[in-house]
Image (cartoon, rainbow, N blue to C red; front, side, top):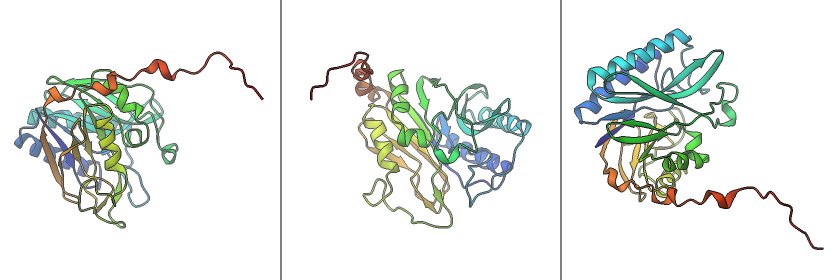
Length: 272
């Protein structure tokens, strides 16, 4: 099946973000992709010092999700849309999964927050597996996939053939632009994503904004660690890959012997 990952520009507003979701979902449909994933917190945008995302009420975010459902149905493409979401008074960083019919299938929250995010979001507490057109997948959001590999292993051990990794990393005002995927002089991000695929024998599909100076590309990594496709650095668009689900065996994840890593329950003798 064909999968797409989007590299949109950083949104100027919630409506601007929805414009790019619409446009790039259409591009994914033209490429016969069955599902497309967008970067972390794309609605309304990830907060950084150089970026000022629009302040959104719960009602605005609910309407934005309804708009994404309409976009998915109009284009017959499932959408993974990361966004802010309120649960009561708590603001979560989540990724909704919307079917090609425009139905919300569920969402994955970001449960392992970066320390810098503690004042912005509340941490979620659950993990989920989703299925679209026969593809079983999990979602791990940014910091989780880079620094908490067990979030990807959980998905693989629970049947995921692919893990989407929406993330946010880069700048439009300072830094350097990579020229080769996974190059030794690049920052570690793409290498970490490659390891998540290899150590679990599954596909990893990543999505980042099209920064002028990105930390990583929107890309597809095979179960043996090969980069199958990526969107060129700094270019708005979608990357599309035709993946063979029979290769996503989850072999190494399934061989993980969890019983070897339990805490000792009995004291041991120390000799001096």
